Length: 63
Image 1: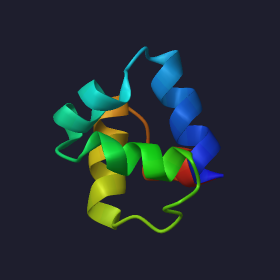
Image 2: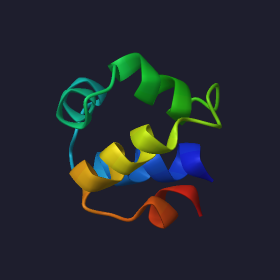
Image 3: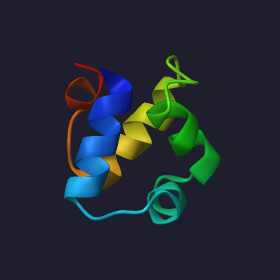
């Protein structure tokens, strides 16, 4: 599930929401909403940016 995977990978790599958002070009609130399950359909551009910063594929985030 996206929310769980994003949080797990982000924490494993020791990124906080603010830094990840800054590096990915999105707001930390966007990351918070995804992780809390309040945004289960983010833009593909957002997913691609998050995946790139985290060094994973979009599939790793959504599966």
